[in-house]
Every structure is written in C-alpha cells, then in structure tokens.
Length: 156
Image (tube, rainbow, N blue to C red; front, side, top):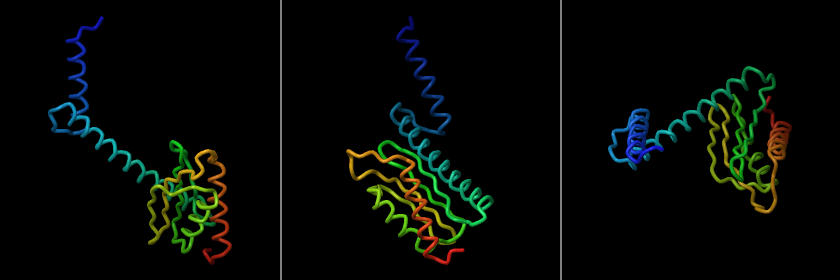
C-alpha cells in the first residue's frame, strides 16, 4: 500500500513536471493548474490554425475546380463545421447560413475570413433538442449550399 507521504511526494513531482512543461512560474497548486489550462488552450488554437492551413493546402493542390472544401465533426451535442477555399467566395456565407437555418442549427460561435481566401469555422447546435442531426446530414447541407452558390455565381 502507498503511504500518504508517498502520494504527496508523487503529486508534488507531477505538479513540478506540469509546471516545467507549461513554463509556469507559479508556486501554488491551483496556479500551476490554471497555467496548464491556459497552455492547453493555446495549444488547441495552434492545432486548429495548423489544421486550417493543412486543409487549405490540400484544397488548392487536389481540387481542380477549386470549390470550397467542407469538413464536419461532432462536438458534444453540436458540430464543428469548416468550409475552406483558396479563393474568395463572394456570397457563399449567405448560402452557408441559410443551410444552417434549413437544418435547424444555431450558430453558437463562428470565425469567418473572406479577404483573399474563404475560411468559415462555426460551432452549430441543434435548435430542436429532441431531434438528432447526423454528421452526414450537415455535410450534405453544406455541400448543397456550395453547389447552389456555385450555380448562382460566376465563381469559376
């Protein structure tokens, strides 16, 4: 059996390791944990940025039509929707938001850039709590929105 003192020493060592990994200068346990939490959030943002860069690179190198690429992932009771294009896509945002509305998804949080490229990342949650929406339905709705936008614009 592990003694109380051995547990305390093990916890202290793990906190010191966490402190060194996160470059924390905190001395209290709670401050070390808060610094670690902030560090994890920064890492998550970096991963998201790198994923968007990877998707943009893949989009430009593999899609001859240069239509926007869509990815949808489940997150809790909602979805993370990414729409990425290496080109500007005037009007596409309207089609995407209409698609969200048609499938009863509320936008909880979103990031959009329409300057030189088109980047859309949104967290959507089902308005109808008793109905379950499948990832495939969200992907299909986004694909249809892009198709409708492409047919109505002179994108190519």
